[in-house]
Image (tube, rainbow, N blue to C red; front, side):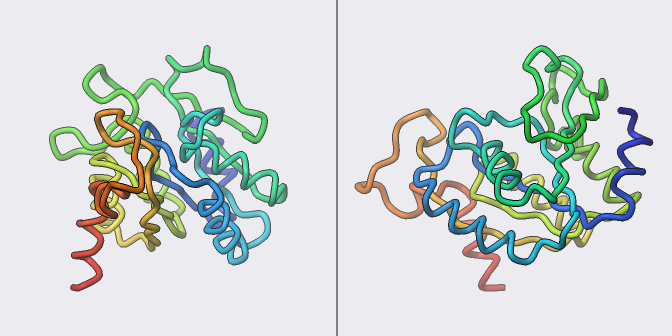
Length: 198
């Protein structure tokens, strides 16, 4: 599918994104599923989600898309991913894929590099500029999530943050109940706590 085709498929739909924990995973999928249940009640029939290829075999943000499709088969899930990842395959819940080559070694998967969105991040921003993203759901996350949130805010995209706990910290060590709430959630905890006081 070309970018033009993706835009045509999206132009008459409400479009949603989910960003957040991937490498650090989610600590309690029961809580995550509860949050998803609430979110899906307000998503109009026939809406679309943008998915960026996160793993679905672990409790990551990628798994959320699989759950969404199981619960709401009426929703469309479009995958945006770098061409280099074609060998990883396409999950069953994906309706169509836009493969792109607009990335570099320093910014392969997405994020902000030297103040500019790159790779998958650049693609979702291009989609927003053309057809508008309705809302971004933020499930915890790390530094890349914070950078993407700043982009969401700059472009005045509606968002909802959920302070979910991660399974591992940034160094790969398992999180336990002995850790503080700030440690269990990660860098987004302090950031959004400050945000809520503004």
